[in-house]
Amino acid sequence: MLNVMLDLETLGNEPGACILSIGACTFDPISGKIDSTFYTHIELQDSIRNGFSINASTINWWMMQSDEARSAVFNVPANACMRVVEALANFGDWVYESASDPSEVLMWGNGASFDNVLLSYAYRKFAMPLPWSYNGDRCYRTIRNMFKDVPHDNNDTYTSHVAIDDAVSQALHLMKIASVKGIELK
View 1: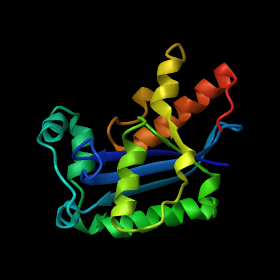
View 2: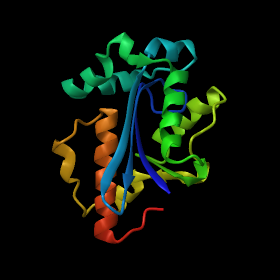
View 3: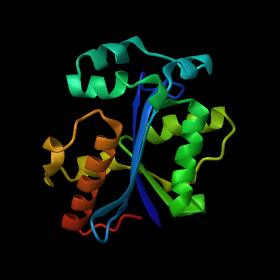
């Protein structure tokens, strides 16, 4: 099985919200190592043209985040951003490099109703194949909340609300929880 930790930065918290960036990493719970990473930014104008939405309360939330996080999300040169369809295709290609069968992918997100759900919606909107199966959805937040006694040691190493940093940080914490608690991630 391929374990993938997914993190999105968005302008809303419901399916159909503009996705600003996709960060993900594959990880090996046996070795405790991050194997590969994926990070891309999405053109906001393209998202809006394609009917994705912006939520005012999320804009207000972004205004309260660190300068580093806001800069990483909003100060991205236009030539460093992709159209939505291109970003989804590239993410799918990245997943397929490690697992050609979507049923072999465990897609971890931070919240049962957030990362995986919003990204799945985007794939459906464009009638693109989802690079994981619905029964491969996994929730890091649930595991984290079940084992609050296992500290999240790497909070100072990564910038919160930068998609790739959050994905790697969450994967490292999840692997630590699994190791400490003797949980097999499947």
